[in-house]
Amino acid sequence: MTTATRVAGIRELLPRFDAFVLDQWGVLHEGNACYPGVLDALRLLRDSGRRTVILTNSSKSGERNVERLATRFGVPPGLYDALVSSADLVRAHLAALDSPRVLVVADEGDEVLLDGLAVRRVPDGARADAIVLLSVRPRAPLTEHLAWVTTGVARGLPVYCPSADLHSVRPDGVVYGMAELVAEYRARGGTVVNFGKPEPAVYRHCAALLGDIAPDRVLMVGDQLASDVLGAQQGGWAAALVETGAGQRSAGSSRTAGIVPDLVLPSLRP
Image (spheres, rainbow, N blue to C red):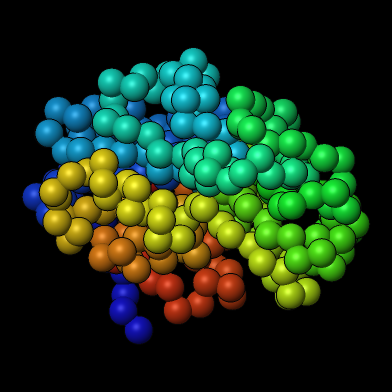
């Protein structure tokens, strides 16, 4: 099995890569504040002329993420070139449909993602054409969702989601993400379309923003093997796993066996 190379910081990687794609939660911050060294690392990338894109599996739009990074975490837009949120891909897909009736599963007001779209929200799966799974209550048991899961599978409703991550980094710690819920829906015969990492579409969207930079000159930095690392490597990028956020849990999970990052970083720091 290939062994990942351990490096102390991104400075020693500058000769090898022209672009850096950074996960947000677990890499830049843990929900309360940026990790030590993150702002210095972003300034180093900017000052060295490297392209920097933040790629996040998020239930919130890119615009909301940019605003929150600036106001809550002190990361101004000038420190990176672009931010890509998988929620925007979900929204774009729904916008292309013909006024669908959707059941929205969301926590913390995330349903505002659909504001302005020609979709008709319905209260249950019995009247829906599709289910939009944006976010769930932290640490909620799977049983909390079995009613719509059962109805959705029985009616053949597709589920559209911005993330199927194994873990979720939150201000109060690392919890399980939506992977179990997505797996349950699929195991019952349902169709789930994930618009986030590790699916190729969101990486292609990022690659278009990077322009003509060769894939082998791009490094993805993330804290989850099954989304950040796997997706990047499938697209021909190198991938680094940080040991912050869900990094340690991801590396130790039996569900990520066989996924090996090219590099390991203690954190995102110069």
